[in-house]
Amino acid sequence: MPPKSPRSIDPRFAQPGHPPATIDEFEGVRFLHLGTSWVQGAMRLSKPDAIELEYVQMMMMWALFQAAPRHIVQLGLGSAALTKFCYQRFPEARVTAVELNPNVIAICRALFGLPEDDARLAVREMNALDFVLDKANHGTVDVLQVDLYDEEARGPVLDTPEFYQACHDCLKEGGVMTTNVFGEFSNYDRNLLAMEAVFDAVVWLPEVHDANIVVLAFKNAPELDFSVLYERAAEIKRRLNLPAKNWVNGLKEWMRDHQG
Image 1 (cartoon, one colour):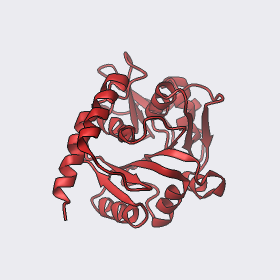
Image 2 (image 1 turned 30 degrees about the vertical axis):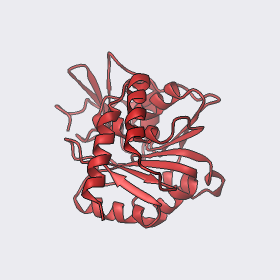
Image 3 (image 1 turned 135 degrees about the vertical axis):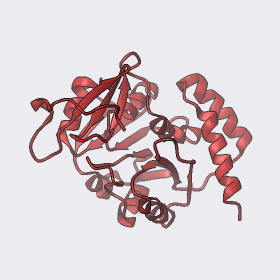
């Protein structure tokens, strides 16, 4: 939750037919809202290219399993933290972001440092369901990051078995999806069951302080060798400055809790 109410609405980020994109700032952090108090993303002004929110950092857990992705797709732009980070830190990858609300795209370009499209970056104004159902996108994605919330943030906008099947279909062999599950309690089981019905393996980390649960879904179940994962975590910390050891600890805890 933000510390204070969003600022007045800027007409540049209030195209009709979509929730307006608004901001507030507190203790050096700029927060994105969709005209309500719910936080949709954040950026520390002194570190605009870092990932500020803990759960958004956790969305990068796929890096434990995909060291050199060629195509990274983000469904739901938020404050563009993941899109920017992947674009900058994985220079060999194409990065595609899919966002339905043009106000979000406009405010990210104006106030959150989102670069303009180029040969590697494509920000597409469209419905995420249409993107994943498009057969042209099937089998083309190494990493899929899903964070789809409306202005009320009661739960993921898309959470049906049809949606998760289409996400699965977009992944290449060995592909990984990370998704954020947040909102009313019933959302957790519904989303996890829908993913487990489609993906070869589904694991999740203990919720962080803001009640977000980040889920890893694998097109093909990996071998979880924790000695190898801790080595990869150290490399991620060195190269990306992300707390990957905590993610491995969380996966180990999940395995312990779900044995048998």
